[in-house]
Image (tube, rainbow, N blue to C red):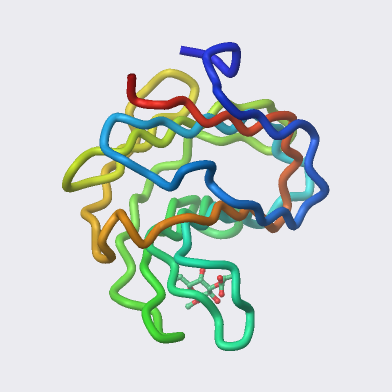
Amino acid sequence: MSVANAKHTVLNPVIPYTGPIPGGLHPGEIIIIQGTVPPDADRFQIDLSSGCSTKPRSDVALHFSPRFKGSPCVVCNTLLQESWGKEETLHQLPYKRGAPFETIILVHEDVFKVAVNGTHLLEYKHKIPLNRVDTFSISGKVRVHAIGYIPNS
Ligand code: 9QG
């Protein structure tokens, strides 16, 4: 699986980046993010949201936040009506400062599965119905070379 399979690709977006997920998200679909973590990174985040409103802020179905400071971890959460839910923290960080990465988000009926550099990292149960998710954002200390959307058939 690579960005070559993508039906839609965004190259070298300016960060922070927010854009539509073409056709919305359905089980079997995949989002690939290829990028590099800058040497001074403290954190970055990928958000799959319901719309792109900033005021009030759109609901975020999946907030995926690798953190490099202190004890390295990945925090996932959901923002509903501008309130964060309960954090799901994995005390493991496959990203390295200064290093390139490939992150794959696989959409399943009941969960998102996230893999980094070819290895499964975590899964996150849907808290917001998939059919409400239509917007992709990435922000924080990260460089992105390509975002690819791979359809399910
Ligand atoms: O800190 O944690 C995830 O649970 C908050 C952060 C917030 C999220 C949240 O301040 O930061 O990571 O999208 C946000 O608001 C980001 C940048 C308890």
